[in-house]
Length: 219
Image 1 (cartoon, rainbow, N blue to C red):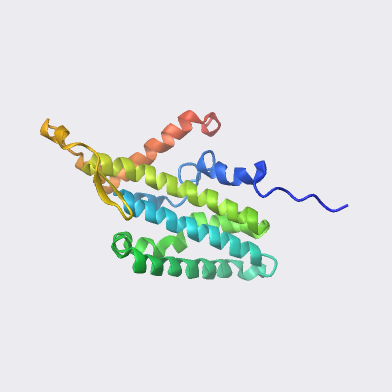
Image 2: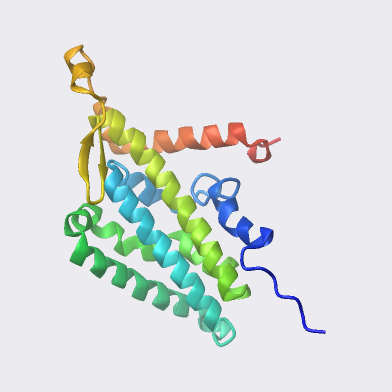
């Protein structure tokens, strides 16, 4: 009898996407990729672009390494992984410079530093090297989306309370807090756009997540 094929979106496969969004989030639970989360979240636009960039790189690197997993000698696997990730990062960087140059300048060196993001190497080592391409791609989607989600949440609060606007790719800056609020004496909190506040906002997100998810609380 032929082996029954597992559905592409079985419950097991869907967990590869949903777990990193919650109980296994790479930033708030595994504390990976925290540096870029602190560096590019002063505004929504660079946070969204950075999140999408990491998502693309982790999905395709997971997929490529999984396809090559049976042909990569163990002693050079790290070198192969770095070459694959570096090639994808260069491609993403060039695409951003071609189609979103202003955002590319805002992100500065942090796009190039995706290659050192612990999330990427962690997923390649822990998952892609031992699993099939489809599952590896889904794992990349989940972890990339989990990373991007935290960046966007942090950037949302920092920009909203820091300058009263939200900035989206292709749309520019949108005034969210009405002018009437400022006329009544409301003032933006300039501390929100300073680097230390990124760490504080991430800490608050971690606290909220652990409060809501009892399994993450230490006994």
